[in-house]
Every structure is written in C-alpha cells, then in structure tokens.
Length: 495
Image 1 (cartoon, rainbow, N blue to C red):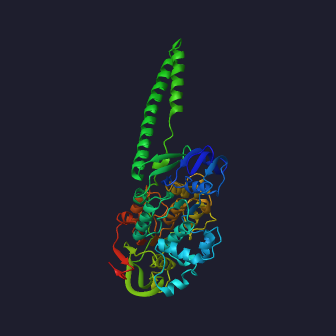
Image 2 (cartoon, one colour):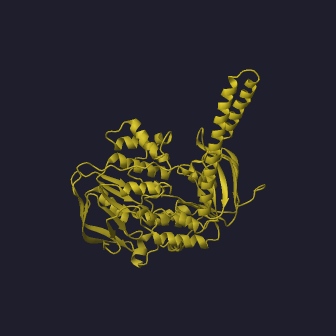
Image 3 (cartoon, rainbow, N blue to C red):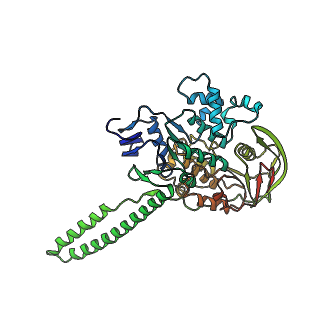
C-alpha cells in the first residue's frame, strides 16, 4: 500500500458496467481503520457496485483500489442469492468461511446467538441447521445474511440495507451491536434514525460527476448539508440564467446599432456563453417519484376476503390459529408481529387466493407486493413487465407512467434482473397501478426504497379504495396510512 493511507483507498478509480454508462469516473477517497460510514446515493447510482469494487468482485477499468493486505472484508448483501435459497443453514455458513473449519457448529451457534436467531428449545435446535434458507421469513433471512458476514470475523464489515425486514427489536439489537463494534463498518441504508445512531460520516456517490464525496458528521447533519448545497447550486444557476439573458438582450440591441457597437455585442455574446458554460449541474439526489394513485378494480364486492384460520410460528414451531376476520371494500388491515412469526407466509397464502381458511370473493384481482420481488419475471424488461400487467395502456402511456417512478430512458428497457433493488421496488409499485387490484397485499413495501419516495407511496396507499393488507415494521410509514384494524399475530387477535 505504498503511497496510500487508510485501510481501503480508491485512487482515480473509473468503472462502468456498460460502455458510456459510468458508475465512477476518477474517484478517489480513503477509509481509515475503525471508522463507521454510510454509503449514500440515489437508487441505481451504483452503491452496491461500490461494495463490489471494495471486495474485489469488480476490477476498476482504470485507477486502483488499495486494500491493507492483512485485512478480511465481509459483505452482508441486501437479499439472499437465489442459488442459495435451497442451501441448509450449515451449508450456507460453510460457504461463507474460506478456511477449513472442522468444528463449525459452535461458531454457527455463536453468530446465531449474536443476531438473536438461535433456537431456545433443544428439540428445535437439533434440526435447525438442516433447515433450508427458503424456509425462513424475510426478517430471519436478513439476520442470516448478517451472521454469514460476522462468522468471517472481518476487519471491514460491509452492510447492504441491513434493516430491511427487521422488526423493531431486530433493528434495536443491530444498532447496539454496531455501536459496540470496534472495527470498520460501511453501511448502505435508507433508515435515517438507524444510521444516525452509530455512523461517523458519509461517502456520497454523486451521480452527476460519478465521484465519491466524503463528509464528516452525523447522518442528519450531512443530509442537511447536501440539501443546502443543492439549494445553493439552484440559486447560482438562477442568477447565471438571469445574467445570461440580460447579456443576450444587450448583445442583440448593440448588434443592430452597427459600427463599434458590434464589437461590444460580440463581447456580450461571449460573456453570455461563459455564463452558460459555468452553470453547475444540480445533483439529482432531491428527485422524488411523482404522486400516483392505484386504481381500484371496478364492481368490487362489499366483502372482499374472509379468513377463518392462519398459522403462527413460535420458536420455529408452527401452530394453527382460528379467527373470524372479514375484510371489506375500502378497509385497511395492518398485520403485526415479530420476525419469524409467519407474517410473510400468511401474506403468501392470502395472495394465492385459495389458502386454507381463506375465501376471496369471486373475480377479485389481487395485487401482491412481495418483499423479495420474486413474483416479477426477472428476464423481462421493466417495460415488458408493465405492459403485461396492463390490458389497455399503449407503450407510450406505459413509458410515461414508468417515468413518474424514475424508470425512464434506458432504465425502463433494462432486464429487471439488472436493476437495483430500489428500482425493482419502483417497478413493483408501477405494476400495481397497471393491475387495478381489488385486494392489495403489501409485504414490507419500504424495503430498498429511497426515503424521499416514502411519503408519496404512503399517500397512494392511504387513498386506495379497495381492500388492503399491509405488513411493515416502519411506524412512521404506517402512521401516514389509514388503518381500520390491526391483526397482532403474537396476541392472536385483532387490536
């Protein structure tokens, strides 16, 4: 690491996935030992790609990434890789450890205890490591991802949206763990309160310059600083625009006078061009999706869904619960309970329309927002996905709709598999608009979504005229939506 300082150093790094679509252009910054940083940038800016450059998954097109040769770097990804879902817990952790470990079970038990996922019942614990990852809830999978990074005992811990799917207790536990963590942490997250609790500064990925800006201070202070810079850039451009127009008007006036005044007019035009060249490109971090509404299915019956039973999971053991729940048109139900109790399993069964204990009125269209987006066809483009969900809109109308969700230009013609998780979420919301559902089922719809979009999404759900079932661990989001009833799976009753 001659000529560098810090644990990880980027020197003049340029990288692009596709020609003429850069993620970084001559970016330089350094990360020192023991620091805790947020990696910030809008959806699709390339934050996960940055992690790939840090780990060595990607190689810079030019420049270099220097890493202290004695450090171990571990990444906790946003979602479990699809090819890992059928692995057992033990096999998953074995893949995470590069070294040969003969007594791996004690290490697995240790990290499972660290993330509050170790079963307390001996009979359950005996078979726990033979369960496949697919059998766990989204919150439990988030804990497994974190544990898979911790078991590597890293010097640098990279966390990509670690609070997604975690309940309040899980977020609090993770926050306290990171506060006490003595090594280097870089985290991508849209949870402002979580970040503000333990981070020292921000690495900001600027999508205009494709460089990384370093800010010191707590997260809220940095966000305010960036917002102030945006306003300053806007004011500077507005002043330059005013002066440029004034110079052009004077140039036109003097040009018609002839003689020596033509030279004055030329200088005026040159000055106007200089103002145009000196205008700064205002960063796009303040972009927000357009307000939207989700149309409700026509002729929706009064009683949309009736539920007589559902399953809950306690300490990894499933039990059936009897109930008498009717969801009517225009009513919104919030389902709550800790990670692993069976919320996602319940939503999946309800979304099927014909689960045991469930009766959905005939002909009701169900719009399902899955937390892992697995009901989207990843081989389709975003445009193809939206056209398929709509039976009336033209490609031009679909493009206009997609643009409102910041899915414009080349993004809308990308395969969904190549979109960021945040962009997949925006495709999923646009798809719901096209579907015109009578019953809307949403499983953690704020995961991966930029915090600037959250109020717009909450307003659309608040105004939805059909029946709605919501699972969310974000109280600030739920508070913006009208909720008629809450089903507490832990209490096994409506509250």
